[in-house]
Length: 196
Image (cartoon, rainbow, N blue to C red; front, top):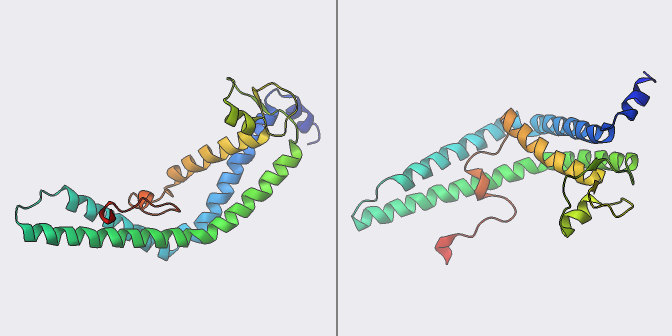
């Protein structure tokens, strides 16, 4: 076992692959935590099904040809508004329901980032195939000495890997948010055009 570490350490891309591997493992652990705390519960399943039903119903109501009668148009508008408000409320409830696992996942990510930061402090873990613009250079060259802008720090590689791996893992496992919940909730919801 002791001879495996020096062999791996002499490999050209060892640091990069270590960061990517740890990012993959972290994503798996985070999704397992989310599954335990959220996705397997009946509350989540009922919220997800109500969001799916409401978004399908809203889609069919909006695609139906509007009737020429004014009273039908008003009642249809009221029904659409009711379904939209129900969809927004369900999406908000889903976001609040996911919040509890978000705190645990954030703690895991914080601990792993601290561990990686202590392991790779000041080390170049990858080379970028381009010269990044200033704002990206500040992120990609964080904590590194020297002026080579193609040097990539652990923080930047870990950030890119975490975002891409976790998002694709959620899609692969079927844990991505329901269709109707994507634009309806969040911290900064879109303003309602009817209020203007």
